[in-house]
Image (cartoon, rainbow, N blue to C red; front, side, top):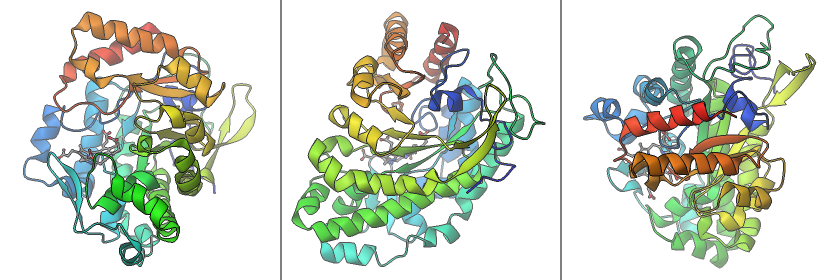
Length: 394
Ligand code: 1CP
């Protein structure tokens, strides 16, 4: 399926941005940088806007969701926006009883930890998301309209500024769409809310292969459709968050989880756009996909094997070590320990430079944190990190 000519990738607005180039393994004038959870509670303008609005209501209000997505792009001059939403939004949209409780996270009306629960949940056709995702498409549309015209950043100063359509020059900041991976969604669904070890999901995985398979199939389709909706509406890359996959052994991950993650990604793998390569030859490219999880040092190779362009690395594994695990040729994203954001500047600066140094082993590196921005982070520190990464060069 070819993306529409107006899509920022097809129009040549984002296809040669630092971010998209890095996701296909090319280095630019400098290292692109964005932060997981860059939108949200670390920003006073976010806290002001959110007063009196519940989290999921904010996600489903296109004006608010787009404004929150843009806030960190304007403030920090990061090389990408990440769509402001949540991994449980597609569940909410197809009618699952879920709320996000402040300070706690997603909480469901019940847990789905056995065959009866899974049968009840999976009665809902995930294809219903396609009719229900209007607020998502609208919010993405608003974001990319502003990114195309008014937000600076992400500009590539070296090489060609090829426009797929041949007419547009220059680049816009790309938007990254995301979804929760099937296992991470299942970890919340089985438990009925956040948990430390995701025991209910891990038990179901072994206790009832049939129910587990049905749950993974269903969450995979829902995640896949959520990602696809964001890309069709204008996102230039997609990130699958398997935040809690680190709770699994490699064997369990490969047998019981990886096939479902591959299925989720199959919903974006067929999305393509026409472009011109550095030599001026017409090429067809796919939308880049990133795969990230926390505590997944043992799983990095398998997470790459699911079929992704870039692997996101948490802060526990240095990037040069991660490169050996995912194999040469794979771009890496990461992985400053978020705890360092509260350290004195000389300590933080040293740590940022060390991440950049280790990232040199990969064909391309996208600077990020090893997990999300802590809510108490001073936003001025994030801006300074962006400046440092950009000044440090490729
Ligand atoms: O009221 C609030 O402000 C609630 C805090 C909050 C925010 C800002 C939640 C609740 N979700 C979000 C937004 C969000 N969630 C984004 C926004 C875009 C950005 O990065 O700037 C993204 C990408 C997510 C994805 C998400 N939600 C993940 C995967 C990423 C990760 O952090 O590992 C997970 C696991 C969730 C579940 C969730 N939602 C919210 C919380 C507090 C949690 C985690 C709960 C837990 O610890 O289990």
